[in-house]
Length: 167
Image 1: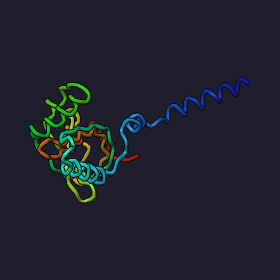
Image 2: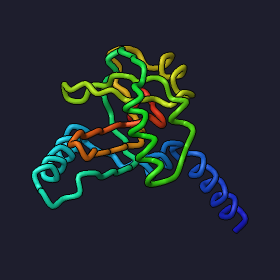
Image 3: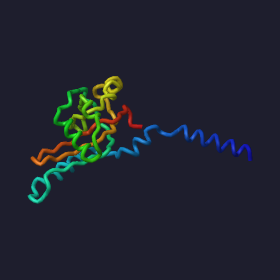
Image 4: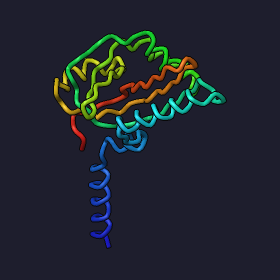
């Protein structure tokens, strides 16, 4: 009986030690096909624009994960794209100073299409160190979708975490 108890405890400890540290991220961030998602969003925005009875302004926010290829390009985050994140988040969740602190975007390629993704300031240095041009990267992002009353559609993926392997 004592040997059985020891075996049970050792098995439990080994099983707990093998938990994937990304499990919590994977539970929180839904995996998505970015080009397909963006196509759906454009079709929906077009339907709103063509419907004279539809309210022309809407926002959406969701946590997504996906892979892409880093192009090696960086740029400064525009005030307009920052405002999309800030205002969408404020409408749905409240204010957060992280958006004012965010300065940079990285270019990520999905199936031949390049998109600019803002990156949290504390991730800039590790991203530059770990992810090289042409490298596949797995991203965890907050997605901000905003359709403005004038018909402009914004789809912004804000990088919350990354890894250079899919595991």
